[in-house]
Amino acid sequence: MSRPLSKHLVQPQRVATPLPLNIHVFHPGKQVEIEWDDGLTTKTDFVEFRRYCACAWCRQQGLIGHDPAPESSVIKAICAVGEVGINIAFTDGHDRGLFPWEYLRTIADGTIANGSRGNASDE
Ligand SMILES: [Zn+2]
Image (cartoon, rainbow, N blue to C red; front, top):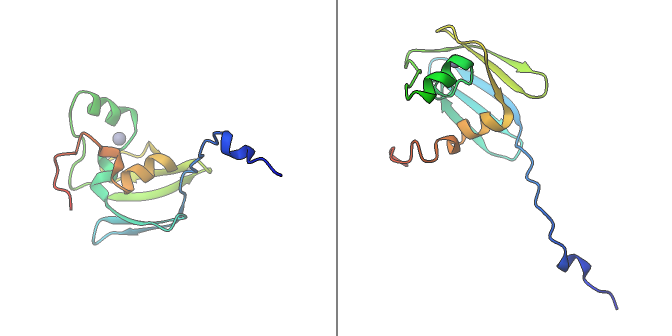
């Protein structure tokens, strides 16, 4: 007779951060399409990445309530930063924002703005 030991153990669910398999930049549409290894494909406007640029200057602007994202800013380059994430360079001169995978995912799937964008139109 076996005893179901596992029934009494609380096993924390470790949820791995989804990683991008492919990143496509569409310049005419100003969108970034990311295929994630959990099967999700996201399409995100450039301006969203610019808005959440994590460089020191943009973080400070965010803290004082400014939206630092010019609608016209365009992604100039995306570079891998080791296995940590990507660096996105924008045409308005911001090129020091690191986007770790987890952070990138929250921007891409829209969960980053919980609360702050809660009143925006949901589709
Ligand atoms: Zn920035």
